[in-house]
Image (tube, rainbow, N blue to C red; front, side, top):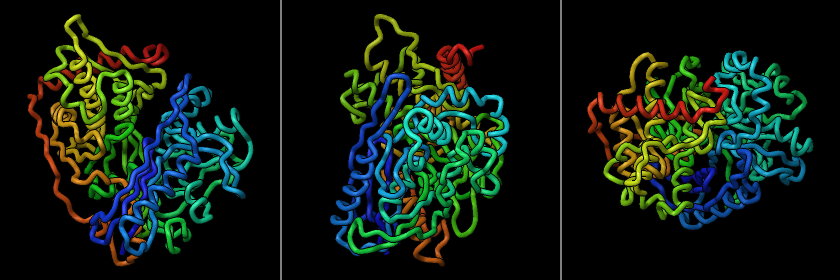
Length: 476
């Protein structure tokens, strides 16, 4: 069996062709660059998204030179747009998960935050889909349907009107226990009259497509971070991974119990496979690779591949809170702003680069502590993937600050491999999740080099710096 697995992400689209044993036969990538607007807006051109899916998929299929048995798709999760369900043409830009313009809509519903959390497992925040969907309806158009990008892309591929359970659970519109669209939530966001897609399992076949050659099934639909959780074999409760992409996303497996976080994290559906729904708890760092891109735009580094060469051996007292798009869990403050503190005339670009990488690691370390508190036991290790895992400086800082061994996933393709595993389960009814993802050994393991007291002292200073970046509302 051969699966074309496509990871449609924020900064680009990656397509791989993988065989039943998990071997990657071909890879193709198409870069994308979101538009960062004044007022917290982040948008993408939907046509560019679709073109990147088609181009990367066709290039990978041609390079592999093997018959395909299925096409799988992983998606951004909370990015939304309005579009014409008849023609498939978009009516609006894609409003990216980082977009903060729906913050007033959340503030107007703040009294319902507890109820929203109880129903959805999520925090009432514009990071999730529903506030952005409402914002589109109020500010851009009332035409067509308004959905996450996966629904639109799948419709363009095969005509289906669907979303997977994991993506739906990121919307603030889904009841977590029954995994159904919730009428109370739809009314709360003024979306009660909207046509919503059918919610399907990750191993459901939703249609067929000829977009990449001869007609093949479309299946393996899953949100990107949960796809990586699956690929990295986080199948038992308490196992966790962090993906370092545009943002950094830490997810821990909860098993079949949708336990709510007591620490300000989000509980979501990890996946629905083989008729079983599994859950995860997660925390987000809004800017990781996007913060590195910001450094590059300022000329401090030429690109992510230069981070380790430029970073100083220590920050020399400089701290960075890289809240360039606000702070997510556990602060949930869209108004938070980034900061560098502790600078002197001797501070150079190497200190700034080191401080920014340590700032990303400090945010993730805060999340590992909160996940451990929710699980009732500290994490024993952290599995990691994504482009920034190539930075030895960042990975060592992560091990030092989280006081955990950091195990680097050996493939840079965790997300499409997770989608491919879902598709393989659709094609082979005898396959379970463990067999679909197979075993793996880390390409590198970073052990903590800092003693616990040094890590604790650094994090205490960093947390104090983070509090100064919060908006006036949050400080009060």
